[in-house]
Length: 382
Image (cartoon, rainbow, N blue to C red; front, side, top):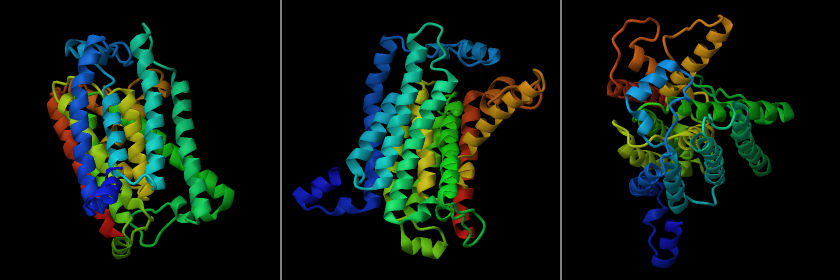
């Protein structure tokens, strides 16, 4: 870690401050993504690593993607994004912090699952990647391993509050799952599994339009970095009546690396995109958002912090459920929402004027910013 190196050799204490390391992690992640992105995209193009036009499951979306020329855009850009993120974390974060270490393992594990899925899609003719069942098993194993490690750490360190839930709006309200024995632990694991896997899939669904997922990730990542920093400060949590989590502030450095790496990726992913994120990027980044929410005890506020991702996930789930239950009818003209607005123009009725892709992305960024600001306002509401 660079701060320790400077402290031990040069006697520089400046990098001991979290605020400085957050900024340095963001700049490092941005620079690494910007540098590695150029070479990775060139390699992906030379090896014709592209997304298949037939894997979306929607005839309208497949046709639109083909007409827009997106079939020639390389995918798996998440590989250099996640590598830049992890490198920045390893350089600037304290690696003796259990929240950081478990977060790194979660990101690396989810990235491995996403990489395998992308690899099969792109190397096996006619393949849609690994099966949904296999992907879910992979995501579940990784998330369960990290959550079990957190439960073990909370138990042996006597920090049972790490396993509690804190509803927003209500002063001094908490759900003490850590004090409910085995039943409480089972409920905690089930709920947090749903948060982690659901968040991973939400970003995966949103990763379908130039700049949309990366831009919203920057907004949500910055918001959660603030929550993590505040949660780790006993003076601030006492004033704001928020739960205090020892050493949670260090996760703000991870959040800085996340924002910086996403900015570097967005440099190439902005319209017209030169690369797509793919499962190797969307799955680990979604899981990281969930982990930051867990550490800062904001799991119940996460739907507001990541409002755009949640809306897209809900629209896809509702569309699928309604289609199956109604015998083939559609609740929306096209799901997820961003594709419906871009291709059909309306999500509830046909015939509306389609939104340009850039218009959709910028308006969704605005919605993400509104959700982020509303979530930060909840700090004082408590």
